[in-house]
Amino acid sequence: MIVDLGTGDGRAVLAAAAADRRALVVGVDADATAMIESSRRADRHAGLSNAVVVASGVDGLPPELAGFAGRVDVRFPWGSLLRGALGLDPDMTESIARLVGRDGSLEIALSLVSRDAVEGRDPGPFSEGDIARIAAAFRPHGLHLAEVVQMTADDVAATPSSWARRLRVGVDRLAWRIRLAPPSASIGR
Image (cartoon, rainbow, N blue to C red; front, side):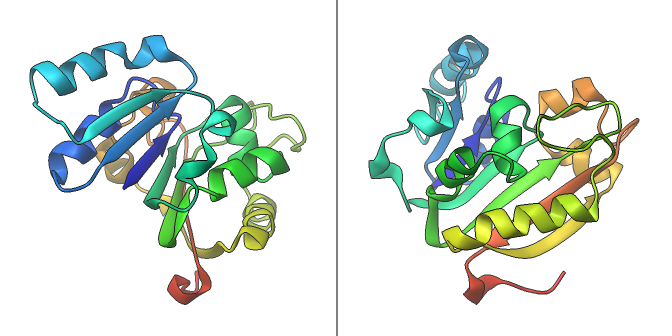
């Protein structure tokens, strides 16, 4: 199972479901209206019975989903999801981490620049301090830093994220991909 947290318009869910028809792909977003059209498209045009969207905050997901995801994606989050991904909100960080299965991974794509204000974080671009905080916040949940990569413009363009395009990530803003995994899957960065 692949879980896309903060899926927005759900395009990433449809792309992942079309790419791997054997995987159940679940998109989660607190704003149901953004996902309506993707939900219709999955059913009507693409016949993607393996794509599901759920209108819920990450912290409101049922505990039965804990540990089921082979991969959890968080692409260019904002608000409470960004705070959790950055390790600034311990409860949200735990809500994100609990979805990852024993052999799964968490992949976070971030773009932070000086003008982005995030409560609890000093202003400025994404930094080594952010990386250290993310690693420290997810470690108690069994997820260790496996990889930190600056994304190229092509990497960002290949990411099915409408939000990244609106922010002009990869054009006017740098982006980073952070992968966290259980220690057995960890590699040096």
